[in-house]
Image (cartoon, rainbow, N blue to C red; front, side, top):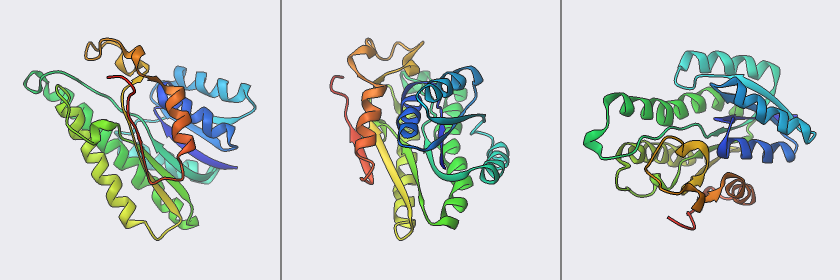
Length: 225
């Protein structure tokens, strides 16, 4: 059974994409830093006759990533990676802290690079598979009070578009997925969005993504902002 790794699989879009891919017959490797939330996703997949494993992983740590991917490649038929994990800090740029800047780039950018660099050799060896980067429409245009977040997503956009050009003639499909705000726990503790319930649900967005997997670029704008 082919396996797909999903980072940030414990909630939101990561959870819904994991469930969706499991329904298509893939074995899901649910990666994240919180075992409790990963277990909930795993249980939901298994209750619907799907296959899943949970993996505690810090994508910011390149040594942890390489070690875990080496083990996973021995135990599973690695087919794909969905770089979904991300953090966001919002507000006026000059009010942001150095720690917020570093946390945003270490997770959103370096985490995505570490994971992709670790899995690509295995996918290229079999000459098949997919890497999907969940980028957000913050990677398409700048937004007020989102300077650091947008900067990180523009970086991932450039990385993804470069990979698309670099591996265009291989059997590994690189997908850039841009979506607007969603009604997920991502906004918990933030006052940046007054009413996240106006956004699409993560399940709805996951459904759109699954229907557009044939595309290299998927753009899903928020119906209300």
